[in-house]
Amino acid sequence: MARIPTKHVYSAGGVVYRRDEGGRPQIALIATKGNSIWGLPKGLIDPGERAPTTALREVQEETGLVGRLGPRIQRIEYWYRGEENGQPVRYHKTVTFFLIEAVGGNTAAHDWEVDSVEWLSPEEAAERATYESEREVIRRAGALLAERENEA
Image (cartoon, rainbow, N blue to C red; front, side, top):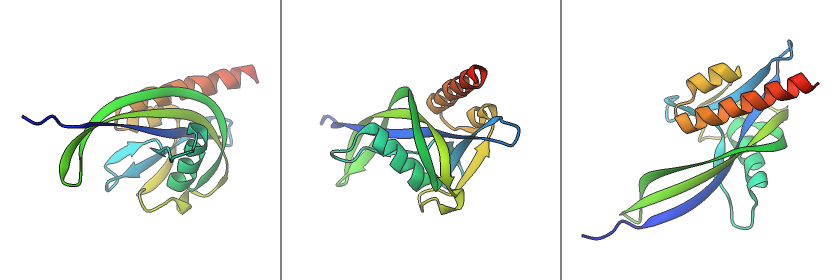
């Protein structure tokens, strides 16, 4: 029996936040696949690119927002299957997420891969996110934002 090849892929993304009129944090979630998958903006790291640069680029492409890079939140890993040249492939994906403050742009300017972008409270975002690994990233980001608020 032939072994299915494994490919390692590396991505970066962000938990994009802003504060509402009352000073409460809101997080931007993106919807894909006919609004059936909710998650964080992320994408493959291009050759010669570093993870923080990828995170800012992907945030702008997928949400329409310009961001200011904050601290690294967490790195997640997962496996999935796909195809290349008609042959099955197993992918081991590593994604590094950063906290990113929205400083400009417009969510209506998101790219074609994204169906919609919504601002939600950290609690609502963690509940709506499709995958548990991203829900955990959102919870950590929410804790970081609460810490920052307490320090101010």
